[in-house]
Length: 154
Image (cartoon, rainbow, N blue to C red):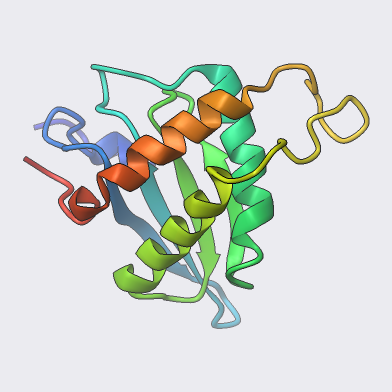
């Protein structure tokens, strides 16, 4: 048995998960009682496939912008360094159905848009590094497997 790590995802056996899925990765109650929930939104199977960085970058922009049209609880949507998914941070303690609905509604927006928001050198640190088509393909593939999102492990 390996030593327990401080980072929750480092304690997850990535060989046993079955992407795509959405899972609660962490929930913290802050000193004044506020709750933050962190979700692992996994698009590809770890150590088998990854997302291309220009698609990751665009999906990050698209999800960050459009998710806030569906929920005031969205705090952040950050890509994983392994390029297999994102962390969705929400204020409060929503149930899985609420989170699934938020992700679905947002990705439905993503597949319909004509541009990546803030994909320019004024609003983005690498404005030329985007792929709307790549982000839309990733979103459509994830949506097509909606019935699998609740199954985290094989």
